[in-house]
Length: 285
Image (spheres, rainbow, N blue to C red):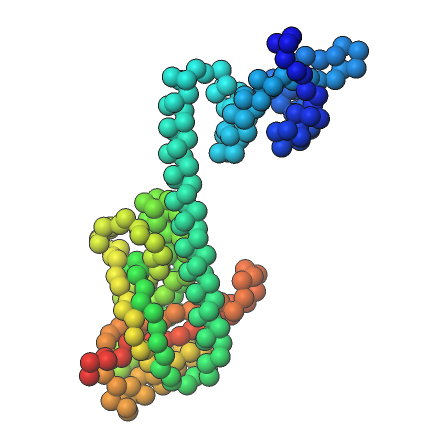
């Protein structure tokens, strides 16, 4: 080592693209210590063979290994290091999967915001037709939930399933489903299920629980009506849509999809949702 060139801490920092402060901290925690310290000036000096070990530290730090664990790893031989790296490989695969899922959720949220912009420009309380893209959904069967109820509580079952089986945060978007009928008032409308969108290749069975089922909403033209959510006025909007379908002899495919999207995202604000009722038109008729 005496015949090898020594490098100052500043030179090491520059050559290895690392800060002087970081090198001082590594010395302090006994992770990467200088080869020698000048007793008179207290300057740190490193020899070039140490750069190899610094590269290992930088690599392990790059894959998010905690410094305390790096200290332990640096004491291992090659045979001991291999199982550790294999474990890190699995951890990285899991992180990649989570990031891909997060990217899909981001994409899905952007589509929802585009949907909101579409609905924002639709006339309130008037029937229209529009193309709706296909969507894979996870449905929870319900028997007593009406437009007067609170679907958020039911959504916890779907959230729990996705968070435990798929290790992902549930998308807070949800919709409700019920049959197209000649109802006389809102209380007669009972949702057959509520659903959330499936945004990836969730490895769920077709029937993961007795009351939870994967379903597919097909793309196509839907006859729709949108309005600002309001319990007192909900039924009149449904009736407007129903009467339009009957009056114009529109052949539809059950069910009615009720989708509500928030205008604001502040939890302390009064509820402000745009609701769209949509029913797929039978294109073969």
